[in-house]
Amino acid sequence: MTFNPLEAQSEAIITAAGVRRLRQGHLWIYAGHIEREPDADSPIARVVDQARNLLGYAFYSRVSQIRLRLVSRNPEPPSRALLMQRVRDAVSRRQHRLLPQAACRLIYGEADLLPSIIVDRYDDCLVLQTLSSGADAIKTLLVDILGEIVRPQGIFERNDVKARRLEGLDEVRGILAGSIPDTVQIVEDETRFLVDMAHGQKTGFFLDQSDNRAASRRYATGRGLDCFTNTGAFALQFASRCESVLAVDTSRDSLEQGRRNAELNGITNVEFQEGNVFDVLRDLEHAGERFDIICLDPPAFAKNRAALAAAKGGYKEINLRAMKLLKQEGILATSTCSYHLSESTFFELLSDASRDAHRYIQVVERRGQAGDHPILATMPETHYLKFFILRVL
Image (cartoon, rainbow, N blue to C red):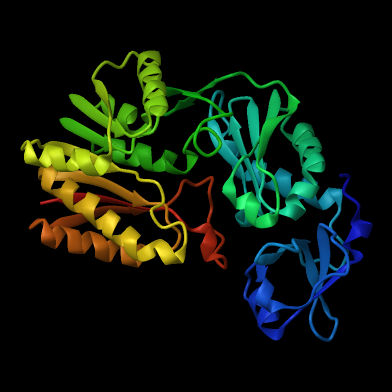
């Protein structure tokens, strides 16, 4: 579908509560704050208050609970020029990260004022996600703009994510432009990784932890344990400073990729073990094993608010067991990517775990997602990753 500003003439009237939300800087309007839906299924809607005062223009979805995602507060409809400038600005902000063979998130949706649009760069290839019906409707335009600004070898679509179902969209993936290799090699702090953009987790690699891997590596020594290792990103960063590293994950395919990454770097002191982390931590504790550094990088245990109570129990258990496995003065690098688990609640959970483990913890560093995943101050949803580096006494 070609972007046409004239399509923005459909109108959404929002309630006073919705108006307050926008004026507070949030970009989302939920279904409950819609006074009147637009007449047509246009990807762009004019957003007005009950007195018909224009508030801006937004991506519109008739089926999603997030009805509107604000694109612009300008009096004129969004244009190709506006979108191009937003993309150019997002790329410019990350210019210092765009080294040869580097990986980087070029566009982080709402935080870059491009709602529900994700673009990741792996060396000379891009991966695009359009996670709302409005963004998906202008996908062809986005590909054109990215090609003009970034000039990549190819652009791959990773729209095989469950979030699209909430928008009434199909889960799809495939090449949108140019050519894409089966795997692409990236370099992160002198460590090389093979990325499978078509089948890997997220868009192929966990870019949001890149700065945290570099930070926690500084504390690595002796014997290391990397839980939920996926393709070995933390483990291989630790390997250069540790005598040995045990890397654990449930995915056999991910572990095999981790082994290939180790071979690529000539790393021989990492052992990849298939297993459930909860079981492995318990078995290591019963065996009397001890480690100098442990990394806990689990998937989101709480994908929604209803799952939060059970998730807290899971987070507490793995952190408690990890604290018991650490030597005196050992380092625990621990995180949660569950948006619904706040940083303060996560820290309380860690404190509770330390008391139950009969250990003291010092906060060495309190961190979040990498700098190419910036947090928009007025949108707490853009702040999902919480990361602590703790010294366990």
